[in-house]
Length: 534
Image (tube, rainbow, N blue to C red; front, side, top):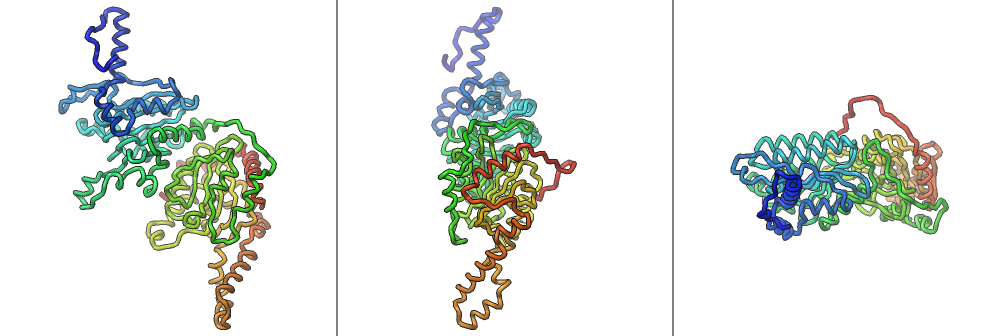
């Protein structure tokens, strides 16, 4: 069947004719944009709205909703073009056999713009997802609000935002940006749990380059202003930089495999054969910590040695790389992982790292996903830039997130755990259920070199006056401080640690800790909501 309607119209006074008319209308609905518009979309390296849905969902599972709706606008000649579907495809289907709701904006119809009817379709499928307790995935490719419909279109954005907020912490929400998202349209993805963008294809910005040029005189291109790389590396709006659209859709499918259907549902469980004896692979962790406290290592190697099959789905890998967050499985069950990364900025906590980790911790807590925290943090990043841009308030978000979390919390201190940063990183005092440390751990108010400047001023001054090697004296004093004050055995003596383990025993220790915490029940004081330092 071609895009053109056959000349012979069906007889609508017969059952056969009515069935034929249904087939013709459905064909018209699924080809509403026409072949030319689809070719233009493909020429840009972009898939159509329906192609994206088909690739995202299990084959043959999509059930479309409202394919026959049309816009009601008569202004600016809009009554002359009323295609079925009104620039968005909505419906339900399955991913890995699990039910989801989805909407996909159709750029080939009115540039994917959101009008009254398109907004109603999105609202309807969001309400259905919330009512049935299933994840919702939005695929965005839109020029924004339909200007011909004015305030009505803007009002629908407000209703969508309200539903994003109502669904937050109740059902997982994922946004896949496959084209432009400008103005008010960007706030719906920002309210969802995860945002996926496609390199060189996706753009998100509140104000476009032309307006910025007019108002401020600043020249900036669309990619630099709001491209996928910008939002993955600089702003932190996006959680994954996809190489192309199939990669974006694959990531969404993989992400959902770690998540429950809703906040009351059980986590998905996969078959897993776990060895509870220490293996040769486990023993490789015994050599991962360098002898020098200033030498970095890759914490992802530690993660891969702990989790099932070494599989780790990292989110926001390009943003704030000094902290690593993502999902994995232990004994076939999902966990969230937060880990300082010594390979980037020595693993210090800055504003970006704190906000990245705090949002992740709160997501895991909302959906009852246990959290494993791996600690190697020398402190907060010093500097006027950090202080003036609010590291006190914004850094407190991570503290707040851990302190209010009621999910199982397992913390392993790998090396440095200094000062306030140690407390913030899922410490016993904030509510960690199991707090373990490697013998390489250093737990103290500050590191040895910093402590020497305060505690051993007289000794250093005497060494200078005696013509001794001051650097060697400082190193000796710092080592003595670390051994006498920062030793994990001192913390264990005071009950601040639940155990000190050989690195090779980490995987088995984490398995056993999570087993013991599987039936954990904890409640917070009754209140409307807390006042997190936003």
